[in-house]
Amino acid sequence: EFDGNYYYNFKADYRFFKFIEYYVRTRIFDMKIFKANMEEINTSPNDKKVPSYKKILVEEYWKLPDDKFTQTVNETIEEVKQGELELIDVVKLYEYFVYFSKSNLISNDITTLKTIFLNGMNLASLHSSYCANVDEELGKVVIREENQNIDEEMEDVLQRFEELNEQLLEKEYREKADSIFKCIPIQMEQFYARFDKECDNIPILKYYDAFQIFQRISCASNEDIVLIKEKLIKRIKENKEVATEELENLTRLKRIIDEYNEGKATTIKVVLLKEFSKELGEVL
Image (cartoon, rainbow, N blue to C red):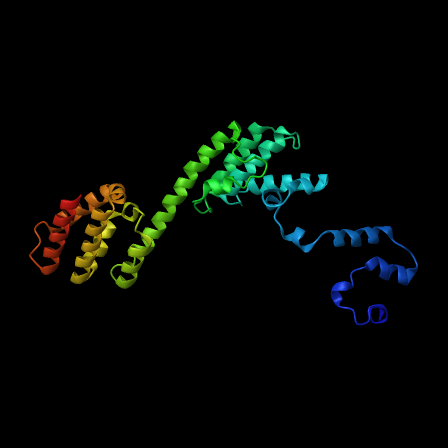
């Protein structure tokens, strides 16, 4: 009845001034309800959705009211402790927090911060993706002037980041190698397409077990054994840098093929595998 009398033809979204309803009903202006309604207005939907750490990384943190800044800092530290953020974001946040500490904006000392952030980085690396554009990302830290050197307090964190980021790259390569080589022998067209497109400058053979490579190749058709051999030989000849990183695994693959062929009765597949090993040995 109240809505019908006082909010006739109004959308429900606009019916949030409870202090007005209370005043009309009682003729009492309730300051508590009024303040609560005003806080709702001042808090935009975007503020509710933006995670605390992004208010530091992406938005202009200095525009936050003091109480909101403290809340944002505490929530961000908690997010770092829980390992909820991307690894590169933890590194960028650390630089901000070092600045906050030096400026006495927070009570945390740098030694404590470093421990929190290093632990947070270890946890973050468990779910993070490899960061290829590190310099670009670190360049987004707005508290540092262009061409200004990174503070010495960052050295340990950056060194640990490089180690973890390299581990993430290797994990990415291993997952890619597993996904691609699993196409042999059933999905050969997909294997050839992905091998050519995705592995040109990646030492993919370094990241897949040599014995499993052999098992998959030996299960392929004779025609595919020849095609795989030709692709590998061509790759080694044309991309020495990548082949150097794959050398250990390729040498192991040749040895496994030789051991398999030893004492085997002559068949087309055995002959093809012997040729595979022979040509592989000539280019390694």
